[in-house]
Image 1 (cartoon, rainbow, N blue to C red):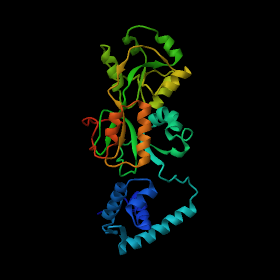
Image 2: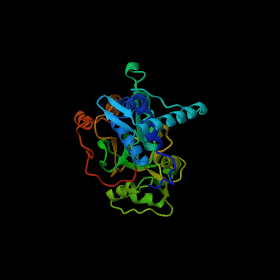
Image 3: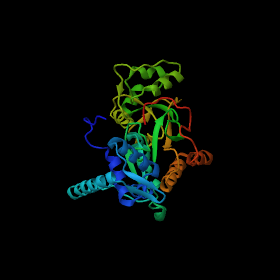
Image 4: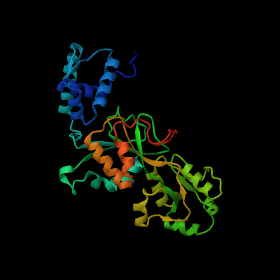
Length: 326
């Protein structure tokens, strides 16, 4: 295997290996790293494949490092100790109450942040408080390999290697800054095409809205495209064009009066919001956070229990259709 472009072993795998060698148990390593037993096992297998070495003997009550594993453990322990001594970076919280949650910047900033204190529950129930570690990412991550407990995304359906729960849908309508809204006025949907339209990386929302009202839309040179919905809203606030409101992501902007509706007509966005998890058994803290998120989204108890069931197969949610945001 050629490692010329990757001279170092996978660092997440080294971290899992060091914890397993130090504790003598994949389960104990998983607990110390706040990931699942399966995530540790996969990281160890990845490292063994990368090195071409067997690092552990599996036993009934844990694992014992092989001679190669013992040598690697000594080196990784020294390296991690050196990094710890010379680094003053922020240290990630650990513990059974820590939950790793990944999502898009727009969902993190516009939906999760206003609810973060309630989702962690520190004021309502200090004894049952959670600590949510947010990972902001546009990539379609392998949740198990990345050590993520949960993900919230916008997409068309279920995905492979995940169990999915639909949180809510969006009935979209056009928004603009108050000054631009006064210029637009009232009338037929076609009047909006006289102004620049703003969309994110996928213009399907605007296509759907116009199609619902008998018009065909294709992005034009005067329209503006941004990768994230946060920027779409910022551009709308600055009067650069008309954006589609995506409830509930726009509530704070509407309450502030920085944007206002310019047309009462709505259309159902072809994408929905989903809560995802890796297949298999979830950690208790992740189960509790999933329940709190589902309560915020008013998900039915039956749908939630199916999502939480360890026997629910991957891909559960809907037949998978390719999508653009994770």
